Image (cartoon, rainbow over all chains, first blue to last red; front, side, top):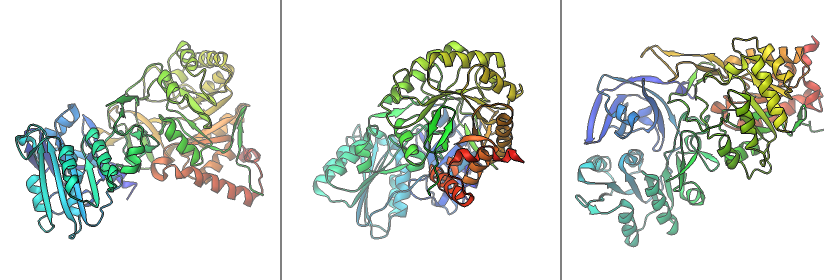
Length: 270
Length: 302
């Protein structure tokens, strides 16, 4: 299994879903990737362009997996622009998974960082009471709200939207909304994925209240399998030792929330 | 008696025989520390150039049957930045790998490490997928002698030449490095190779051609170690497809004073180092050896 997963398998895009004007979900058949654990990722080859680490998105069809991508740089835009019938290479799954605590949990996501959190919601136990906080710049960039409600239909749950411009849901950063929520509500676990500055704030909010917290990190990643060293952070490799890390480790890190590495391996400030 | 796993590679002494090979995991002192504590005798850095290099776009490393193809493109933070990154090193034996085109570049880079604890320098004369450096330098024996001799006159640290299989007879490259004063030879680098995906009909690597590593190249590497150590009186570090203690012993019997491990980390993670150490120790007990040096080149008696 592991030796097979180091080679790309070619998959054909079967369906393309527009989530927002800048975000799309590409659906394809893959029995293994459809079942990965929340937090695990695949390396996605866009032939002729690049190969990117992508968290594997859930679908509502069996044996189908997906990637949700925002068009930003050249490579993510190339992935975004793929049409049904076009091919990508996938290898994986790689990385560890979220440790889902019993009881009340909060999922805090920004943008496409919601992808592993949607899978976490799908893996939640029936007795989990789940609060999902979705952060976005504005109303037209909010996505996965309906999906979150559908996934959690059998759970006690709540979906909270925060937009920076206040055009939908609560106004402000999702971290501000979380901070307010934590004044009145208790959680047994908080899980976050999104921009690192956001996750850094979430981790500190949770740690300072003694709440178990985990974040799924994204770093400059080339091989995805613990060989090239590009994604090193302190003494860990994000691809091999993560991408999910506990809040205690993250708060002690001298790099998380402060610096990341360039393609050349140079430390650069956020 | 517990077997002694320490090794001597000319004037270089290491507590354990297996090093991290260049190009793997090698850009942060914290990660180096973890690898050293996992049982590596030394860590070899990624090859550093005079300026930072981004490397090639992905795919840069792909798994294939028997190993990996890679064309990372020597991405690295540059010698001066790297020297700062490891400036606080106290305990880890770090071998600094350098890559360049001419002797002036190598002298400049070595000078960046004047106040840093460096166990040795390894000159990359063998990367098979970047123009004007690596194998293209190794294929020019006169240039090899000039570069090695310049580095030798710039530093008192031992200098290792890492050779590979190019268009010049690699034994001539070894000779040129010895003539320049090399203290040891690392053999071999990845072997120039490529793979094509039949479904999309595209080369697997963005750079199309890269280097082959892993089990697939081990017999070639063993042969080279055997030939070099038979022909020349120079310590050899074996590199190429070591993924178990048996592989490590095989290289030692072929004539290697120590070995380097790279691709196997992709399958076994850094636990591979303790596996190799423990396996060699058991083998030595069983066969009655007390020091690794007693085993070096034993296959040559047949």
